[in-house]
Image 1 (spheres, rainbow, N blue to C red):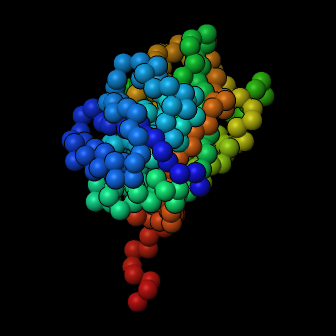
Image 2: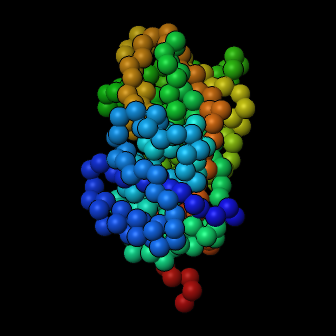
Image 3: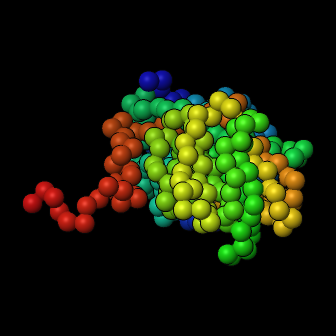
Length: 282
């Protein structure tokens, strides 16, 4: 793989990142890797501060939230990312503080794996489109208050629902909120939309996985106010007759993983997925 000659470091604005940052800087200097920028994730106009293809790698110090926000902000810059976890779960962040000094020099020398992942483009009526890395959630905004809505692929009706809402996830997002709602885990490079109705009145509203080549459209039918939330951050109100258009974003993003990275091990260790209740090795 390509050797890394320059990096940008993006760090959490709320967590204690200093130790991890010092270790990253030390590793970079020891390998003669140029540090182009060190910025908090909430830096104003961060997409303008960092130039397109300016660095060979973006190191992201934080949790999954910091990683998702950085990807969304810089997805058009065509720079791969590697996450360093100082949060809790850290499903998108491969390294921890203790492994930085050992693993980063290997990554800088080109000993790593790389993968491209798709993202979502979300537009409500004629508003400016948003980028979703994990999911978009369409919901009533009130506990136990149901919505009437329909889901279309382009202009073809898929289903009509009366439920608390629906989650539309990327493959990457299938291990997040979508998974918590009972959806399946999908390998993160798959080009799909994963659809999961929330607390449906129907007993047959199961998850649905579709290729992401065609747009999805959600139409709110009843006269109540509803909301959409993108990646747990962007929250918008929608009204009767509103249309939410979800499409494949033209830009994908690249994640770098240390050599030997195993997605299924991450599922087992971080989500307890597939773990038996008893030790089957005995």
